[in-house]
Image 1: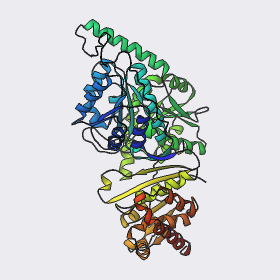
Image 2: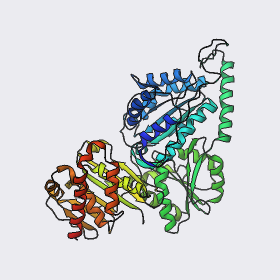
Image 3: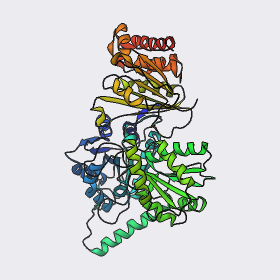
Length: 374
Length: 182
């Protein structure tokens, strides 16, 4: 199939349709609204289900109910919407039914703004909802990756009966790029054995997240944990650029990772041995690869569009082998390649021990940059 | 060809986003990598709309830049904002129909072009964006003019197809004006 010029939100939505999504429930919020708008026309035309719910709380509970029937279901929203959905997401995880939830992240906390952000890292990666559960989290950085990984998201959700989050930011939702959509997948007629699909001729299935006896709940927690260990072993995805002989490793995901790739390319042209690690799965995190790279490089620079959240994971994995530094923009500001290039250059010239908390050295640098920019 | 970054900026309704899409379609149709990203925030409600287009032979990293190679400024606020931001040796095309001042920066290639006046001569006020695209292709030939016209013909929404000859004329006039005035 030939490449088309596709807008992020539309491309993600069409890719979900072609991956076999049978129902979408949502509530509009910038910058993810085009996703829902697209589905509102496309799904009914195919005889599938689209519901604009009265709120995000209703939408996620519709996703929960529909997921129990064993069909491929999803929702898409943006940061404040995800906060409202967290209770339902926890119920979905506790009931062990598959669902895909897209978060087109925007500046926060609170109402914040509609500009691109990665400030929901903790919320999306570390659980967000209550209780012991482990979401799979994918972070594509181009329209093509978003298309490719939305299909994978449904497959992983089914395989592990798990919640799969796809996190992008407003840039990705609004951007147009040439990309190729996959062919339409057939929707399987048979539903999974566990689904509630009418019990005629068989024992009824019961799907619930209630385990009144704590020991039963603990057995469930253990099952989820063991399943997560399998996911950690099997499902790690990352992209690398120029790491073979790198002395300075930049780590960033999504838009920040993509912008960093331009800066790394420029650094290479200037003779600085920089390389880029861009996690696609933020959970499970590419820990093993990062450990290997920490043995190879002299220094690490983490770049994010938040106050240093993935940074904490990197520090935990690197275990002080080499200094870790940080550069972030917050509040809906996207860092530009020249900022990250300047940071790579600075890091390559810095032989100091590095701060215990890299934010302590970053805050004054950012304050200086902001005052010069305004 | 190195990577070329283009910002097209103007009032909402001047067709800046569509002009960027035309360049994006033309780039894609001719085998180049391209990204198009609009301003979508509250800044749009302040009256300005802009988009960033990056065209390259290689995979594109950042879809955003601080110092673009080319700026097409359709109104004065855009000229004021981008005159200092255009990359050294870059190109600034400014719509002189809407303001009366010189471009003072010497280290860039600049062109003042009265696109509103030219558009009125053609007979459709909304053609300013295509005149700008034509002018740009004379100053920064990322693609031949004919290829961009071809892309516009292939991707223009059905309801606007009848304006295609005027759009082509707009591109030609912009291109010619730029050739004559540099």
